[in-house]
Image 1 (cartoon, one colour):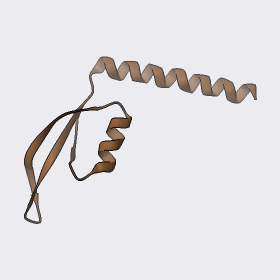
Image 2 (tube, one colour; image 1 turned 90 degrees about the vertical axis):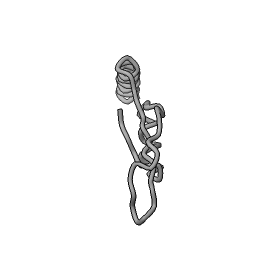
Image 3 (cartoon, helix red, strand yellow; image 1 turned 180 degrees about the horizontal axis):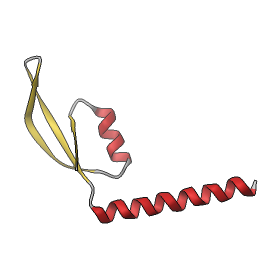
Image 4 (cartoon, helix red, strand yellow; image 1 turned 90 degrees about the horizontal axis):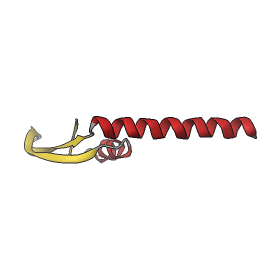
Length: 70
């Protein structure tokens, strides 16, 4: 599980790139400058993470072979 403030779009995009999925929103989680901010919650199940890690390792191993072959 990971959380980011709604306004932090770069962190949200980074989490999505890593395979995290939106899981919910904590409304009015924090106040900054008199403005309430929502917190976004992302999650990634263990099986999903393991599958993504194996895919990454396979892609990395394939890229290493191509570099040696050229």
